[in-house]
Length: 569
Image (cartoon, rainbow, N blue to C red; front, side):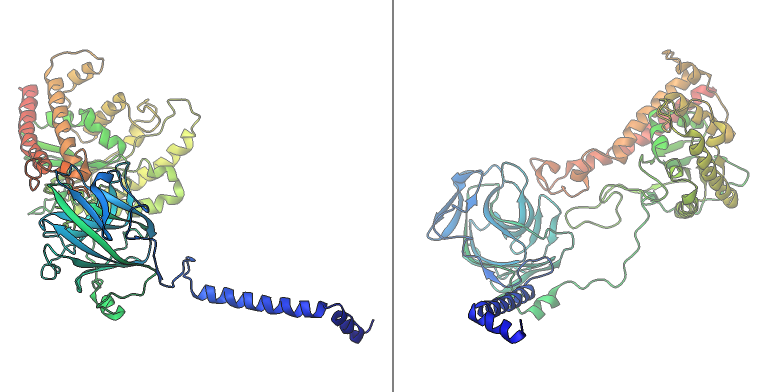
């Protein structure tokens, strides 16, 4: 069939018309997809501003939820939070609408004007009672216009820009704009908040707050909610808002390494070891390391031997070892001996300790990565020595203990210990290069059944380690009584009395070194009522309780010295 006849046949059957129609539809569909793609972000969310008409109808709270409906109502197009009695805890009225990038304007009125309220956004419920976690645009005497992070990071942008703008006891127009991590707010046309907060939530819900406290009424009259808004407020253009964001610092002050933060810089540089290990005069000794170093304070053997060998010197021994520490990473709680004041509370009040001598006991876990990581280990270990040397030049290096298989798990002990010896050799070389004493536990304790799981020292292992350290550092050995105590006999002997006193001191030290409920002490929950005196919310009892341990530790040091003298008298 010729091409002319084919075309004629198509026309006769009306197929040609159908073919052209389908082609036009496909073209229009492709154009629609392109236009849609231009109107979306990389995350697939539409960037076209959209006014939300469902946020608040003005008639009821059908699209809202709360655990205490008795506090909330709608009157004359206004959401009313009201109580004639004391409100036991913060109450929240939650919208069903989730927001990401948005603009919200709300008229707010608070009576009496010395009460407190707030607008939650990008927030979520933390429990069945509807408590909130997330951003809060604050409302109330002294906090109007400030940005707070409820049940989280506390004060974020805390300024007094709204003081002159607020009409106390009257209606106030509150505007909130959130685009990405950038947040702005304004009250009655006065810009109050301009912040770029990379740590903040990018999505969540809106809620209105009725704050805990005396009888009060707060009125919220939502004006407008826009999703994917333009970057503007009623009285500020995009250019003006961007100009108000804090300028990023060009240079950042390097942070103090975590191992040295709790150590004070010595007023006078201490001389290094001249003729091997020696303790002359009263000495502050710090132990850093990982699990075996940390657990040594629970037995007290090493401290007992060191103290008994120096009865005329006052030794203050503080174990700062951390079970998960390696030469590569040492993690601590937020603000732990921090050098800067957090935005939501006070800095760690504890003063860094002066250290005349530091015992460094690292390398056990690191050796499990094998010979391939030996160079990395050596460099990081040397870096730690450099950091600690800024506090004292008297460093004592302790090598890891050998691996075992006491549980019969079929561990390749030969390979593990072969790698461990390479790491021990690296530590020995670094000690030799720096003329530092090195205690070699790796070779000294091979085949002595010292661990409970293959790497963590047993009670017997802790004793043998303490005795090995004592011997290699040439300390005297008044320890027959301690050896007897290992059999389980409760004999009132001087050396064991000394050890028990050291254990009491170590218990106090652990309470000071890592207090329970850190978040309430110096972490991100300092603003919580339970972190403060129930009669005076401005008074924080917890830091004072921790500080009271310092003189107790000093008294224990004196008592330990007295016990040590009894052994030699």
